[in-house]
Amino acid sequence: MSSTPTTRLPLHDRHVAAGARFASFAGFEMPMWYSGIVDEHHAVRQAAGLFDVSHMGEVFVRGPGATAAVDRLVTNRCAALPVGKALYTAMCRPDGGIVDDLIVARLGEQEWLICVNAANRHKDADWIRAQIGAEAEVTDDSDAWAQVAIQGPKAVGIVQQVVGAGVVLPAPFHVAWAELAGVRVLLSRTGYTGEDGFEIYIPRDHAEPVFDALVAAGQPEGLKLAGLGCRDTLRLEARLALYGQDIDDITTPVQAGLSWVVGWDKADFIGRDALVAERAAGPARVLRGFVLTEKGVMRHGYPIFDGERQVGEITSGSVAPTLGSVSIGLGYVEREVADREELLIGIRDRRVPATVTKKAFYSRPRVG
Amino acid sequence: MSIDRFTIPDTLRYTVEHEWADLSGDIATVGITDYAQDALGDVTYVELPAVGRQLAANETFGVVESVKTFSDLFAPVAGEVVEVNAEVVADPSVLNREPYGGAWLVKIRVSGGAEALLDAEGYKAHLSKIS
Image (tube, rainbow over all chains, first blue to last red; front, side, top):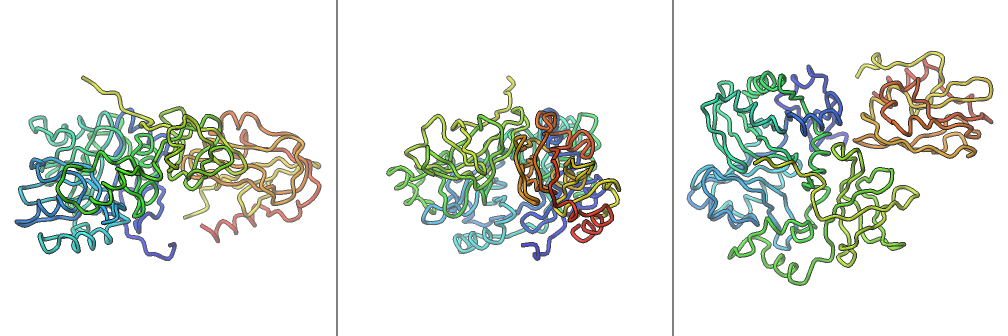
């Protein structure tokens, strides 16, 4: 993989100037951290963080058949989604395996934005064209867009300040076009951190003024630049799956605890028959959360034991800065042991007890 | 990446795995280098051996976990562990703040292997090659 050339983000120079440490991810040279993963993690939970997520892909579906096509492409219900609303969903293969997990936004009656994972961009664009290319116009416009995410309890106030007090911002899981620092951007009230905030789609060549305006307005509020490192710890605390680790082509929404993104009453979507059958029979394995009860850190690939017997494997593991640096993780286990209160994690030569949970490790305090 | 920003004291010896050893009499005080702590990022957990354990040179004697990743610790010399730093276990972040000072990890009574260690110039040359 090290020989793969990496692409620089449109805001690369800003990251260099801010002292970012870079690492290669999905073919992009990504800022991993600036002031430190833990420091940035706390800033997002307590104030706000600004992430460059321009690596994410943007695929547009347009034309008279677009809405029906998208509804068939993904597992969640799209046909009745109002214009200006977004949802989290998966698109599956006929056998139920997850091609990718997505944010899908209805921009018009027959215009959709599908935000895809960077590592899956080309696979997804090919898949979408193959499945619905005859019914609607499919455009992979990823190279034309930069994307930043501003997340945290202060994020909405900072964006409000930049767009002006008179502008009504989109509600959670809604999108709207807005002018920000003189640039027309798409504001999406979504995220991948467990906090309120926006993902902002910016025409690629105009990313810098938008970024600078958010930094200038945000810094007095405690906003920090936040890298891919804390994006991972934040999403894991919020129990949000990472494609390529927690879900992939051979895991299904039923196994991954994503049945809630499946429109079970939809007449048809790709993978429906397989998912209905798996749901009825019960999945062989299911995703669970784990909280280590002793010192140590769970990592991807560590085995999960019931006594002496291996019953699964950790898919994501780290420390949880918000929870006092206890180690948390996700992993698949055989269904027979999925309701145990405790299982053992193999950490090098130790077997360390971990409590098993179905819930998010962290949920933000709700106001009002 | 320039290696100039890393502190590499002339008085210490080094391994290619980024441990340092301070040799004094027959005791080697051992830690990880400034480069190592910088590459790991925020250190959150340190696992060290029991006092009395016999180590071969290059044997794994513990682990350092950061938020991002983890790294095995390799014994720079052979010998018996005579002391471990309980303070760095209690507060691993000291490894990021003062890798050569308060964050020493173990003291080893040396029975061999010290002749294979790099001096500061050798370690700098090694860093230049890999970074």
